Image (cartoon, rainbow, N blue to C red; front, top):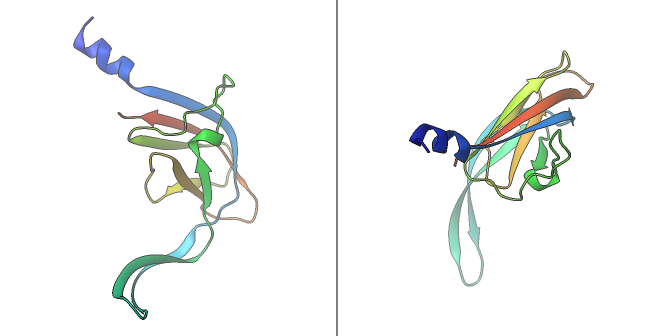
Length: 122
């Protein structure tokens, strides 16, 4: 086989139809610094907090592609492409991890309906 054919066959792709997105986009993401002092330890903690909305968390293992196949529990370097099906858009919030990703609708009170194209980049 040629190198190009091997490269193309190494990528796994799933099309997940009809996902309803109810999560809302946060207004701002803040970087916080806090300290924690207990009887035995002292530490400084850096963390982020989102003000406003609540994103919808989707696990790959809970999704089913258009053929009825369940997606694997973990993916190597996944990329999620959102394909809108309604006037209300949706976006991937933050980055995709190997087990989950977060979606949020961009505006409106109604749910956004989207199809997802999930590609394992390897």
